[in-house]
Image (cartoon, rainbow, N blue to C red):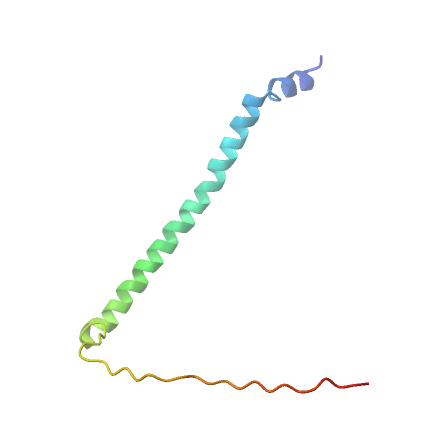
Amino acid sequence: MNDNAAFYSRFAGPGAKALLVGALVIAFLLPLFLVQQIVDQRRATRDAAEESIIGPAGGRPSLFGPFLAVPYQLRRTRSSFPAKSS
């Protein structure tokens, strides 16, 4: 057996393949984690900017008090045209 065949036969087992898959999963999760951190940071910045705009104006708008509910019915008419004959 030459050196290349011995090398490949050593790393062709199921344990080595499982280790390779595990390493690839970890390698792909690292960028995902970094992107999630950026998203969280930008969400916090957005919330802080929103609060700095809304805060001086008295806070978030809210509706209190009695509400007037007016019942109504929505009527739709559908027109049907006869099929064109050739």
